[in-house]
Image 1 (tube, rainbow, N blue to C red):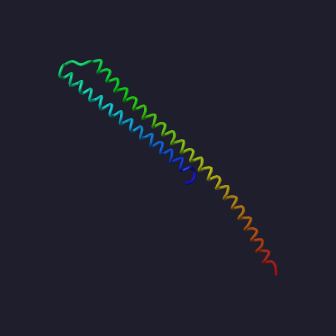
Image 2 (cartoon, rainbow, N blue to C red):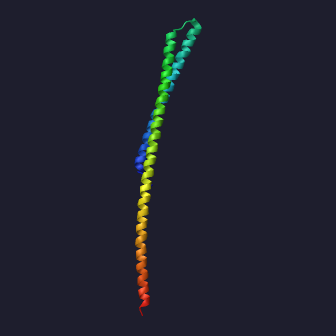
Image 3 (cartoon, rainbow, N blue to C red):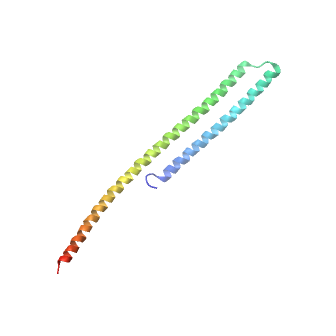
Length: 135
């Protein structure tokens, strides 16, 4: 393909895929952490149901921890997405510029070839005319 370095784009796509995989793993870890926190909350709810007592500070701390983990995961995912979008746009712009340069060079080469062919055609016509005018 013309207009971009295939190996460079393929390498960048691999990097982005790797980054997406890492983000997905992070999401899985965060979901596991949330599941563990939910299980702990259920355990505390069971304790409350059985005894009628529960440590309010522990509940508040757990809620804060859950909220913080969810917020971190959301921010990380947004940052990764923004970075991937910016890099994708940069690669696209670079490919457009390279394609425009290739088209411009091809147009210049085509004009030069056209001029040379016109000169050659004129020379052939002149030679043919000269040969026709000779007895």
